[in-house]
Image 1 (cartoon, helix red, strand yellow):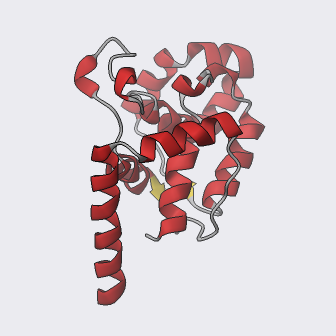
Image 2: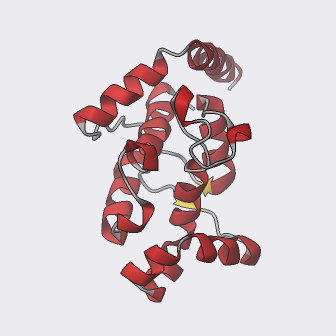
Length: 166
């Protein structure tokens, strides 16, 4: 993992997060695939289990109504990642937005974990900065939280050690 990949994971997460004024059911399949390719290149999501498929179907009924069953079948791997990103917020006051304050707010290392377990292939090394200015400002503010700064510092140390050892 390098800085560009880390930033792409985080920016993608902000881009598709409901607290940034977006609703999952409004994301056109073409838009999802376009942004996925910009942020991650040829990396593909892993196949999801039947249990995840069923749970996701229940949570994304509005998306299926709007974009169709065929689109859902094709996009479910991508939607499962977007849905996972949306179980927690980014800001301190987002922590309970899903009526479950136990979730807390995202740390960069947690977002990386989602992508590491949900994708295969190498994430693009080209940083994509395609966020709307308002969302980019939210991203920059989030980076200033003490717990986020500490987590990024640890991640960057780990990346340097990994680069030395490989």
